[in-house]
Image 1: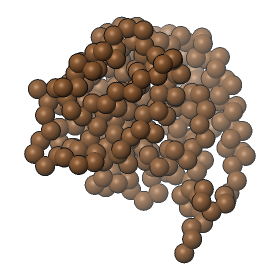
Image 2: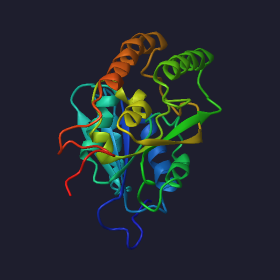
Image 3: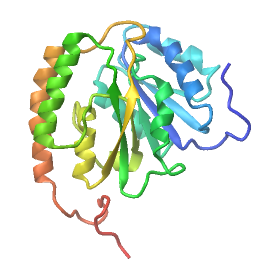
Image 4: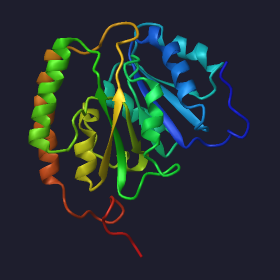
Length: 259
């Protein structure tokens, strides 16, 4: 049974955001793994965003909340996609540091401490706003690995974001900096390029990858490739069109501040 340790009360500094769609069979496994991985980082919260599931995902989360007080549930009445679910979770988060991971168990929560180790206490190093996990030992099908390799090669060639694997769902980022990024569908695949666009440094950490714990993937390689082409050119346009300075009040890292 998961309980908050003594002295762990108060506002969480870390918010773990997990998009979920039809992941009822994975909820308990993932929750127990998060509780074990984050036992030493209280106070934290885990926000599960049910993105229009048609199975028992939401009911299963509700059943677990009595045993795991760090759990929160937000429900979309219809599916908005992974980026929409991440955005919902970050907007609702109470922590200043956000950790994202996928709801299928392929991003082992045991890897979270590797990302947290790159922080300085509960804060990012100066100039850094994103710690990006990069998967090693991929456990996907051969077709999915080849599709991912091709997409990553094309993205790196065009965006030069210095990231080997942007498809890894395990990321750690500054909440305020994330909310200043331009929002669009599928933006979660381009976070390194978007953070770099705003002048932030990105750190990279190799993380393990696991086979899907249960259920089936919500993505198809062909569909992902087609939308990825449009997204890629859209991100290139955003990078090219970014102003070097913005009006005060919308300032990002490195821009003007009132003194």
